[in-house]
Image 1 (cartoon, rainbow, N blue to C red):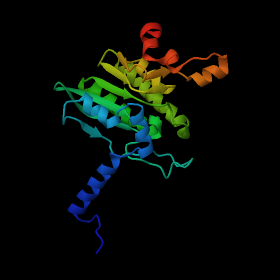
Image 2 (image 1 turned 180 degrees about the horizontal axis):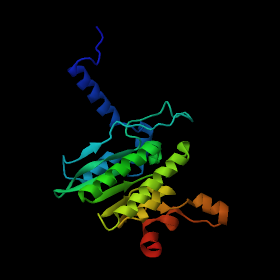
Image 3 (image 1 turned 30 degrees about the horizontal axis):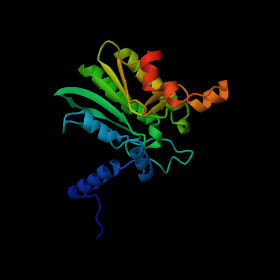
Image 4 (image 1 turned 180 degrees about the vertical axis):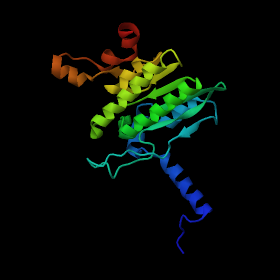
Length: 229
């Protein structure tokens, strides 16, 4: 007889299959592209940041709700962000790590809900919150609900200001809504020649103003360290 999920053993095996599937949410092509750029994956960054074995993941099996624009057939587990808590030198911290290999790390309604949850928990328990940012901005397929998700995050940035430390690690090219939240946090760390923060990219600047500007000149680590502050 074909195995069903009626027994405890079958359910545990099914859960393990889902866990394994969630570890490979991004396609091989996008993972390879991330590697070529010398960048770690979202989970690998958390492994480097946190004490070994301390990470507890939250909302691992949530998926986006969008059904239009071909999204119904493309619903990877976790929805482009890994969230949870762990310790650094035995001190508890809440964390989220954006996954650029899934939809370019773009923010959806569910993505925002996951981030807001760990921010709320950080305030409740008086712990730092650390965001590892690697995102192209809003997920345009979701329209205004994605933008509303940013509003929820920004509100929490303001409410948490002066209450718990907020730390942003910008690890890739972040644009639009993806840079407003880091700008409101207490500490922003960037990677030279890898991470960028700008409202819009060089192509749009060229179209609107006619000015040629590189990614590094527009929003690189050196630019923000010496000019924007």
